[in-house]
Structures are given as structure tokens and as C-alpha cells.
Length: 419
Image (cartoon, rainbow, N blue to C red):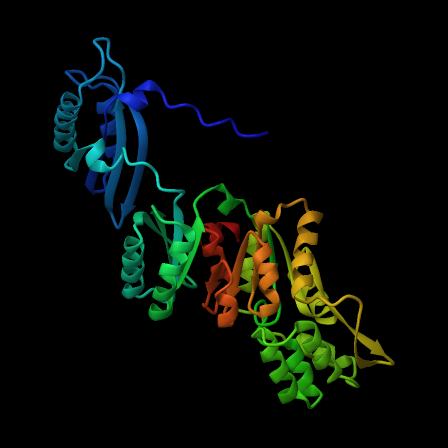
């Protein structure tokens, strides 16, 4: 069912004076109740008020409560702003005396309540182990430098990485990414940018690359080592991942070097695979949160299909090595899953489950992942080559795959609740 259109602002919201009350001090019980009780039964010369906005946060025992109130129409006509503010000042003094808190009153103009919104706000996520002070300082300076404003900061996680989410208004996404890129490179922290809104928490499908993303290392390099062609194949792999070679051609050249390997070698390599730290946590958490999870790989089905079954994944796509008489022929069977093929696979799996592409996430590290990262609603370059990091929506350079959860906006507590 479509959402109802946004209601027109009432005359009181447009014409009547508004103000911001800020309550701060050591957190204690009953402060919020006392303030709203005073607003509910003002008496004296304060007219009835409406609550326009509320935000409250407690940081290490210190409470900050902000309440925007507007004067409701009075029988005698419009409420005069100076009288409204003076009455609120008296109410604030009473609440301060009763609670022992500081209570400040600001007019709409002084609090910036009448400023026209400058585009939709964005989340800026800082991740690191640890997050150095210069990363926060640099991000704050960069945001201010392009006219942005930090409205709120909250901690998302303290393990396996520390991460903070800044809510930023007044800046456009591309500007933010460009301004923050240099901060990330100089501070060593990862910095991601996402638009605030339902779309961020409406993601429902994730696709992971396998080699150097879901697992450590490159499977084809391990196979080549057993064929005595490791150096040759590693050189081709590096060139392909850096975007210097066409993936399909490089794949055929590397697979040709495997000719004659006994098929049992595939089992040996599969059993020796090491998952990237945090991989199981990421998949388990997202599946329990209702995600469809799968892999799309430029590797080989003889490796990826058993891996997908082991991890309980919903889907998998990869290339298939040709086998004859118990040995690899050096050829491939069927359509090659290359750069374009990965994007097609993502679209195919999203369609299978009825999930729009803007509700999908793709994670990868190589140039052959770029189309997939671009098609997804959110493309994350994970410990990727510079060529890939520069073109993805966002980049993670942490060694933990479950840091993807913080980019998606999930807190550590939500991750633990999903276990």
C-alpha cells in the first residue's frame, strides 16, 4: 500500500512561534516526565503548546534532551513571540529548580529551526581498530568545510571494530565522499557515506565475492601451485584483478595452466580454505534478519557449491572446470561468470526472490566485481585494489567481514540479539 502523502503543515506550525528547550546534566529518573508535565499544564501566561520534535541521548551518564515546542492558536489571536519565549523561560527555571538540571530556551531563529532543509541528511560511518582522534577531527573538519553540519553521533560497535555513525545535514553525497576520502587515507580509518532513510534498512539480499572476500587468498593460485605454475598464474591473476586484463581471457589462460591436475586436488584446496574473519557472523546475522545471502564468483563451482551448502547460503554462481577421466582438461564448461556475468547473476537472484536491485548489497575486491558493485543498491569494496575502491559506493579496509553490518547501520547489540 503506498504511503499517504505528507500532510500540509497546520497554520499553527507555519505562523505560531516555536522554540527549542534543551535540558542537560547528570542523568536521573523523572527528568523527561517533569518537563513534559510542565508543558502539559503550563498555566499563567504560557499558551497551550504542541510538541514538534523530541530528541534525547545519554552519553556516559550525561543527559541531553531537546524538545521543540510551538504555541497553539489562542482565543485572543496570534501568540506574540517575545511573550511566548518569556513564559517558556519561567517554565524552564521551574523545571531546572525541580530537577537540578540545566534548561535552556532558544528561539526558532537562534536554534536554526526556520532554516530551509538542504537536501536529505546522510550517515557518515567511521570504522577502525581503533578509530584515531585525527579521523574524527578530520571528518568533522571536512564536513564543515563543504557546508555540512553534524547533527548527531552514536557508537555502532566496539568489536570487532570500533565504529561511529555521524548524522550529517547540508551536504551532498558525492561532496561528502570526495571530502572524506583524503581523511580516510591519512588517518587509516574507513569512512562510508549513506543517505538517511528507509532504504538503508530495507536491504534484503547480499551477494559476496569469494576469493579474497569470503575466503582468504585466491583458489586458482592454490590450484596453480599444485600444478607447478604458481608464479605464472599469480601474475595473470594480479593483472586481471587490477583491471589490466580482460577477465574472460585471463581466466582461460589461467585455467589452461591447470591441465592434467587430478580432480582430487579440488577437494584438497576446498578443505584448506580459510574463511575471512567475521564471515560466519555476517552471514548468520543477516540470515536471521531476513536477508537472502549468496555468492557470485569468478572461481569454480567445484569449490563454491560445497562452500555455499556448508554456510547455508541461498544461492551461488561460478564457473565450472571441465573434467575428463578424473583430470582437469584446462578448459571450462558453460557460460563464463566474468565482470558482466556477475552483475547478471545478481540481477537474476534478486528477481528470483522478488527483491528490487536497490535493496541489494554486493561485496567484492576485484575489478571483475565492479559491474556487480555498481548494479547493487550498495556496493562495498572489501580490502580492494585502489582501482576498485575509487569506483565503489564505499570501501572497507578492515580485516573483518562482519564490519559490513555497521555500514548497513546495525549496532553491535543488534548483532548479538540476532545470534
